[in-house]
Length: 176
Image (tube, rainbow, N blue to C red; front, side, top):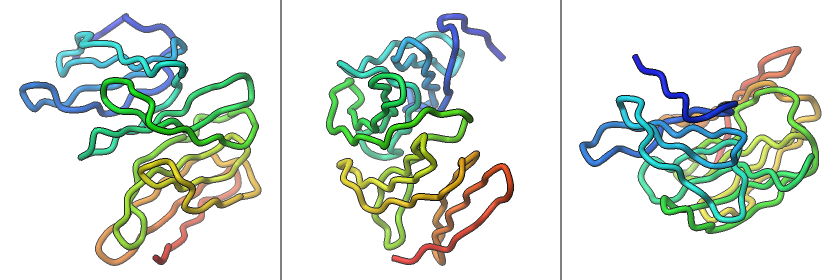
């Protein structure tokens, strides 16, 4: 449909906010540590900088002007960073040390059991961190194996956490 060569080494592509006509955009992260927003036609819209942060992955809150990014501090040290649409840093949550060796989905916007909303962050050491919208730790889950995939979803009856490793896929039903 389109090609855009504005970025080298794209690390992630995710849905961005709607443009002025209500059409969805794309957010791309790269080795530059910024977010490049692409229009529905694939044209560069603008580049978003979160001051002092090199973002390699991002997730958007679908209704609020708050987002979460995975920032690299230095080799083996990452943090989850909350930021607004204008690039203002809102909070910072330090993750345990480690280096990512697989392309696991690192940050996801999630709804917790009971209707609360926040972020699910997969750390490089194989631990999962649930953060509320302000970046406060809600729960931590040390899985004990290298996580190769993670997803969480909620419907009217249950919240389900799916975790995959090289050996298996496991699903948990979470309660409030």
